[in-house]
Image 1 (cartoon, rainbow, N blue to C red):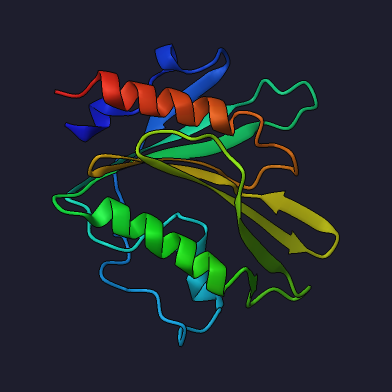
Image 2 (tube, rainbow, N blue to C red; image 1 turned 30 degrees about the horizontal axis):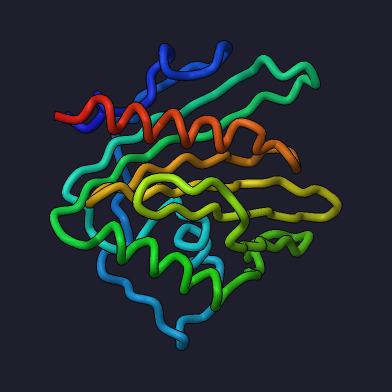
Length: 190
C-alpha cells in the first residue's frame, strides 16, 4: 500500500503532524504541453505541480503541518507519492518544466484586486534520478504567499513535497522534508 510509504511523525522534525488523505483528486491525464495552450488560471494546478500530466497507477498523499514557528506563523504543506507503470514520471517532470517555460506568470481570475501567480524552476537539491524545485508565489494586493514544491523522480515514482500558502521565505522545511520523504519512500519499499 503506497500510503504506508508516506512520511510519518517518526521521520519528521519535532513539532510536525501528519494527516493521511482519504481521497485523491485525479491528475491531468494525457494533457500534453502545447505552445497554443493559454496561460490562464486553469493552468495554475499544473504549473504549481498540485496536478501533473500522465496517469499514475497509484497515488497517496498526506498533509504536513508545524505550528511551532516562533513568529506565530505555522508551516503547512503536503506530500504526494505517485507511481507509474511506464515512463510517466519522467514525462511529468519534462512537461512541468515545459509548462513553466511557457507560462511563468498567470493572472488569477476572479480576484477583485487583480492577483497573479509566478512560477520558475529554482535552485534546489539534487535528489533521486531527477529533481526540480518549483518556485511559486501568488500576489494579491500588497500580500504575497509562496507555494514552492520539490519533485523527485526515483525510477517510475514521483515523490513531491509542497508548501501551501506560506509567508515569503517560509520554505525553510522544504528541502529537509523532501529529503526525508525520499528516504522514507526508498527504505519502506518492498
